[in-house]
Image (tube, rainbow, N blue to C red; front, side, top):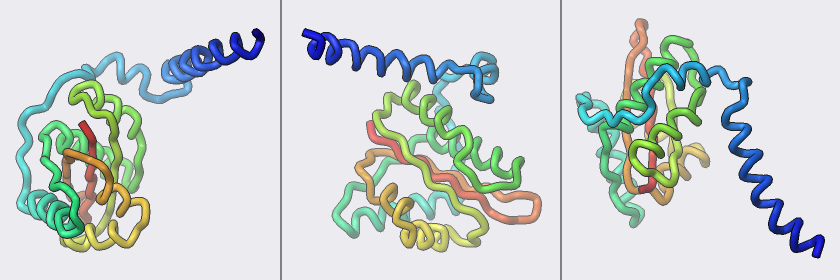
Length: 170
């Protein structure tokens, strides 16, 4: 009887612990989240020639190894752009606030899986892709079970490029 009760309570306790951890005050974004609308779908995004080139290169690679081509979604590219602007402001390559980006994409687009690649200081999109393909974690994202993606490339004041590529599965 104790085992049955424990087996019934354990999943509920785990879900409750997860939910409480999501609202803890240790996050630096809890106040920002309340102030910013998180469920707004961004429908327009102006892709640069380099962003379109990178999207094509990723899809060409995926198709060449027997995977589906991914469809771009403007909202994901916008979230990628926001992250590039954040990295430029911080002058650092990072995945900071990924959980917030991921939750927004899940909420707005109904994604069931979200992953992210970032890169810095590659002159050409093909160079960034080559670097990602040499990295097991980044390559796993490119070759992953995804359906859509978004891409942003932004330059800092010194002309150094920041790349963010977010993959999702719907």
